[in-house]
Length: 262
Image (cartoon, rainbow, N blue to C red; front, side):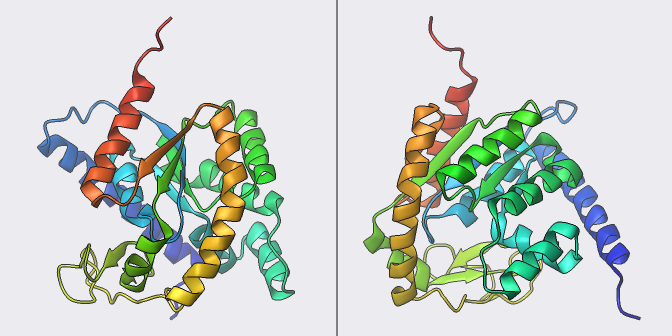
């Protein structure tokens, strides 16, 4: 008998519970007080394809016990689950249209309301891409008496991205990313966690990348300016090795905790 949606939901809940236990064990091994709830975070991670969002997001997720909302994955999940928002999005996509900002923000709100992983905050990846989207997101969070803590941009020269992208490998189910040279999996073409096969995305090639980068720069500049005016934007040099990038991000998180000088 084929698994039902209820079966899948139950397995996801079990996986989340196991991940929570693993996180507590790891924190205990590091000498952290597991009785203390980690600080919350609400942030946007901005960066072009290959900048390292897929490498840094799991680290942020683990540190804050928050959810990673990659909008592409979220959209596919809602469509597969046949939620009202997913059905509306599928109809628009089947007609060749773009999913509306209202539907995308609705999906994010749905995750915040229903995904247990989001109880301590979120890392939003891939949204907002325009100022109107940013404004709509802020409005939705304001209705929840919440606001963004950070808008962190991974900055890297376009020329360096070609080598990164053409060597990128992805675990489709989780979104975990690797690189043949810079971040290879322990076993060739296998995910470190599940052992399942890794793939190279069809659009991870130089020609497609140049088009995506042109679109990214055109869309991102106004959004970056929007968050700069709100004083939550910070840029990180993403050309460094991943560990150094992570250390810079940790400094940003620590600075946020420091009281402002009067």
